[in-house]
Every structure is written in structure tokens, then in C-alpha cells.
Image (tube, rainbow, N blue to C red; front, side, top):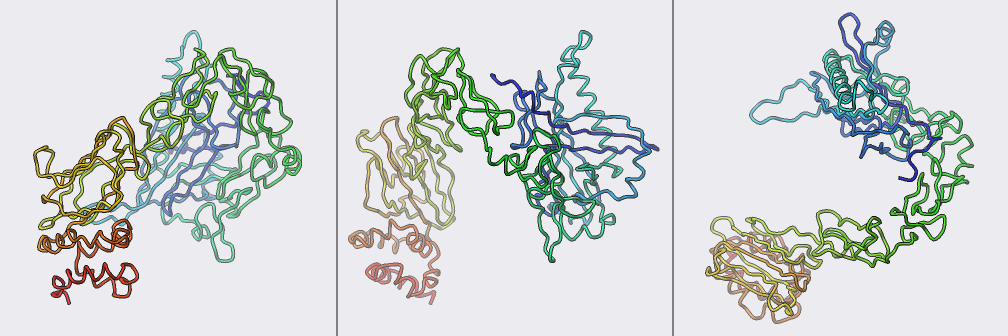
Length: 592
């Protein structure tokens, strides 16, 4: 890494878990001076995080709040998770009552644990249990995750890194034990901006005036309003207070403001983001603006330094430049892309440059790269992947998911990644098992399978997996004209297979199950040439809305009357209604 740390960026103050014991009663409080986030998940649950989680030995700020500190962590952090219960209590974060705060002066502090990151979830929403009457008593479930950073300065000749880790793990475990006792005795508080809050409250303790709105909100003109950015909610005063100079808040409904990166206590009150921090007025800071690509500074704002030779920075407002690696130099200072690094070979799309071997490597399966001369590949989005390595476009990322058990009155099967091209070397198997006394009707509106592959991609429908079982339908080519048919067997086993050759759009094939008493009627309809003769009728079999209406009537004939005469005239061409009416009316007379 070129820029290891920023000497003039002050490290963010750490969270502290302080526990004490007085008169045999344990009490703990967690102070959260920076990087805090309060999220009310629902009326009876909230999540609270405090500090910065570690990733690969480096602190990752929650947002552009406070820069990573310069402490060099030499090992992964110590992580511990604990679960607690508070009976007869609701997850409401409320300020601690004044009487309780008075006693706190007498307490002798016994333990103080510095914490890198805490994530606390409190949930008192009732979950109904089967077979039991749900108890009227509330229970608050608290899940707390702690991270503690390993400190290089604590390693000595007498205690190596493993020994330091053991000591710190024991210290954290002891702190969690004390915390558990304090929670059981309703003596655990969280401190934001000098106010101590109770994590959960027993109904009797609910403080008047605070119940009207949830935490982070105040009452204005009879409505609950969330505290805006640039302010924080003070539980003590039950109002939104502007951030003091040298702090900012870019999220609504928070319980404290964040310290600015260069916290000299100067600047303006009510800063809504980092750019409004600073010793000068926020207008001057804004006018100065962010560092442009190819430049960096300690806080990402001007004055900026140009990226030196051999480094680059593609984004604005950054605090470091990336090295080209492998001893490569750039054509000039202030480079904005890896493409400005003078590589030994020029990589084409679908490849990335390896700075160690100075070779172009094909993007692995599941990634792509559309540009020339890059040193990375982009991962396919979601659960998609590519057919082969060396992909050059996001459209090569295809959804591989397909197949399954089907048994409803209506449904559909579709080729994976539809309406995009289906992947290579895929095999999908569906089983349609209709409800009792029902048969299957299939409509293939259109199907796109490239014929050049000598039947390499095939869709087949038959009674079972056995190749000799009764086959209802099989194709390996494109048909743009729709076709409807009834299954020759009560159940259907459907398989779609593709090879590594050409691909196509594939298919989306709807099906409906109908009462077997109507077998003659349905076959009479689907085998009538007039159904496919006119363009209008073909459009019906390709139109999803019309197919849905048609299938609705076939699955539940009494729904025929749901589609009023006027509505069906607007939906279907007259010739189609005439064709159906002549066939259907004699079957549906009993429903009139």
C-alpha cells in the first residue's frame, strides 16, 4: 500500500464498555463517541452500531465520517457474540431517569474495556408459538456482537501475540459476564452525547412525555417528526439539537453527531456532512470542493496533492492513490486509471493485467471486463455467472437457476435467464404433478432454439424420465407460431438440455390443469385449426394477460362469468369468442 495512513487525520475516539460494582450491584455503560448508527427497525425493535468493524486488519468506516485511524492492527480482531433477555420489558431506548444518574457518582470503576466495534440488536416483537397461548408478558431479546482490536504494542518478550490474544479474549469474556449481570438487574446504559439511555424498559418505568414519539423523533404540530440531518436527538431534552461546530450528522434520527476528520472544534453548527465540517465556514469548504481524480488529500478536500508517478486514483474526493504494482510507472503524475500505467503488454477486453507476472489473464468464469488495459475483472451481479472465462460484457452473465416441482392449477416453465439467452451446458428438469382428477394443458407461445447445433439444445415433455415413456412434445428448433396441446399422460416430466454451442432466447411455456371431465371439450378446442388460423388468435396465445384469462376459465369454468360479456369482447376478438362459445356453452349450462 502506498499511503499507509494519514498522519494529520486524528483517530476516531473508541467505544468503551465500562462496568462497575457498588453495594453488590453490577452496572455497565457503553459510551459511543463516534461512528454510531441508530436504526429503529419497528415499533418494538432497533439496531445500534457503534465504532468501526475491522476487515482484513483495516478499519472500514461506516460512511465518509471519520477516516481509518493510524493504529496498525497486526492480527484479525477478537470477536464475541452474546445473547441476553430482559423479562417484562420493551425495546425502547429511553433516557435514564435523573434519580439513577445521581447514584452513579459513588461507584468505583472496576473494569474498562476498549471496543473497536459493537452491534447491538434489541427485539421485543411478539412471536406466536404454536399450540400455546401467547404469554401477555413482554420479553426483550438482546443480541450483542463485540470486536476488539489486537494491539501490537502489548506484545512483549514475556507475552507473544497468542498470549496477548488469550488475555484480551479473557478480558472481553469477563466484561460480557459482568454485562449479563448488569442487564439482569436493569443496570445497563448506553451513553450518547452525554446522555445515558436505558436499552429496554419495563412498562411501569416508561417516562411520560417520551411515549408520544419513538426515539429519534419529536412532536411538532401534533405529528412525530424525525430529527433531520445536521441535528441529533437529545433524550434528556426530548428535542432535536443542531450538531456543535467540529461535528456533523448525515443521517436522520440519530442520537449523537460524528466528530469531523480534523476535529479542532471549529467550523459551523448543524453540519450535514463532512464537506460542511472544517475550520472555515462550510460555504468556503464547498467552494474549495473535493479533490479531483488523480489527486488526494488527508480528508479528500482541497488543497490536494497530485498522485505521484507509479500511482493513480480514478475517483474524486479520495485520501490515497493506488500503486500500479510490479514496479510499473505511469506516463505522468496525476494518473486517473490503471490504463495510465505503462504495462509490458496491452490487455484486450475479457482479460486483466497481472502486475506480478506482467501477463494478461483471462477473466475467470463468473466475471467479465469490457475495457482494454484493466487490472481487474467485474463480478457478475446477483446469482448469475458466465458460460466461459474471458467474458467481455455483463450480458454474458446469465441466471443458471431452473427446474423444480410444480403442482398448482396454473404455472409456467421457462429456460434459465429468460428472456436473455440461456446458458451453455445446462440441464433443467421440471415435474408437473397436477391435483387429483385434473389433466394438463400446455401452450407454447413461441420457442427459440438455434437449429445450427444439430439438435444440441432440446426441450422434451414425457410421462417420466424413462426415454421409452409416452412423449407429449419434443423440439430442438425455433417456432414462432404458437401451439396448444393436452398432455398424453396425467403427470409430466420435462427436460431442457443445452450444449456448449450456440444459444438463444429459449422459451416461457405456461400450463393449466383442468377437470378431467372436460377432456373432450379441451381437446376439441386445441385441435381446432381455427384456433391457430388467424393472426388475432395467434396473438391471444402470445399475450400473457389473455392467456391468464383463458387459463383462469379453463382451470375454474365458473370464472367464465367473472369475465363479463363486455370485458371479454374488449379482451378477445369476436371470432375467438364465437369459437369458444359454441364449444363451451353446452359444458357450462349447469353453472347458469
